[in-house]
Length: 206
Image (cartoon, rainbow, N blue to C red; front, side, top):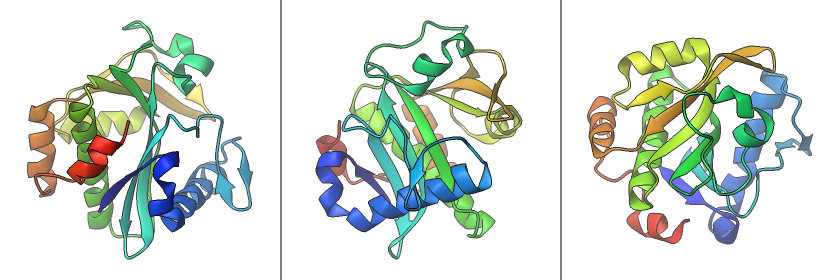
């Protein structure tokens, strides 16, 4: 199941909210060694603000994966810290483009479960984007992972800049288009229902 959360809707799932920050701490601080803030077992940064939208995949009260979405009309990581990483398009500054970040999936679940979570989060992102007039998401991804993912995901992806070093790992900036064709392809590939997100939560968010 995928839920959308913002600061105003946190009372719906306070436990999931905390667990998503715990997952981020386990992956980005403990495993990857990123130099990002953490406190009391929770990872956070300057972009965890009221304007952010969070997608949480969860089952039986446990967070299996997450993703954070940031409006490009507001401060976002790529523009603030690595503006030279984007050379194939102007750096977005409107709500027609959003930045996706903090995408992660638990590693202690089966590969089949991981694939399902990835498909659900990707589909949820497109559903949300189509509902709110978001043309595309931009994000950083490991260069070797992009080569693999772009070969089989039925989504329109393109690199928008050269490889850069992020915390000792080669990354590349990517643009992912939100299209109905891409959404249909994800539903077919991962065996997803017509709506990954509850329509009401989509309307309330953003």
